[in-house]
Image (tube, rainbow, N blue to C red; front, side, top):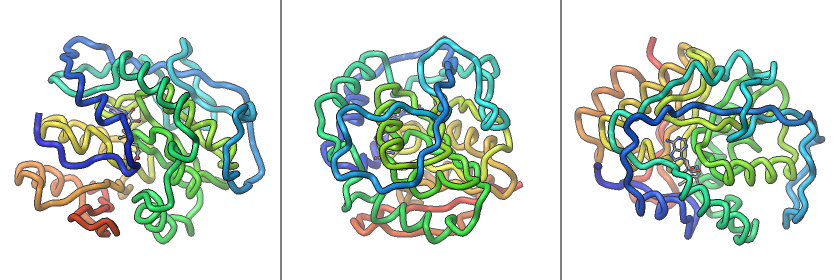
Length: 291
Ligand SMILES: C[S@@+](CC[C@H](N)C(=O)[O-])C[C@H]1O[C@@H](n2cnc3c(N)ncnc32)[C@H](O)[C@@H]1O
């Protein structure tokens, strides 16, 4: 394992801790993606209430949700999300992943933590850095297909971009976190969002299908070996359309081994770089896919 270079944008976030408490070898794990559409929903855009209601509204548009035995993909994203049988992601090396034990921990965490603590706080880097970058760079464009890898319960990206003719696809390995994110997004009035259970090392996304992919404090990019980071980067590169963009946070060239810097530079051009208000050389970078 390489050294840990980042942590969550939210305070006291337990995910990283749980991940680091469990090292497991997953040679042979199939990594099969399981997805299922739920009901159909389209809510008027409203502001998120200060306190999210205990009994959330039932979704009325379609989502793809985690861990269910179904291979049906809603027509609205069938050009983006792969049928499960198309992804047979193996785990060629030891790495931190979301195990059933970690999911059980997440389930307890989301049921016992107040919504205010699960949502992106006003001082979080999602709100102070990534949200403004998205506003400046993408909100003037419509028709975007956006995938966020490992959103957990955060809502900033979807609330900024999942409107109009855009489509937002959250890809996360943890079902309890995704279900909580869906609850928040429904309450906040985001439209056109979908959630898929998927592994960043074997993304359930069609090749050349996304305009924008984002990650914030995502273990495959911040607490992985160089070889695993290359694999994750390859998956992002494969899933992006030609000229598509990858917003990666945090990323600091200075702390990356030259081998990874060169690997990245072969595949992407850095087109924007913003320093976090928290400083500490924590940059968000926008990487544009090279042909
Ligand atoms: C530290 S949280 C980051 C949450 C949020 N993006 C933020 O910045 O606050 C990491 C998230 O990545 C997910 N995750 C970890 N490994 C993953 C993998 N290989 N593929 C997909 N999601 C993964 C976890 O389930 C968790 O939701």
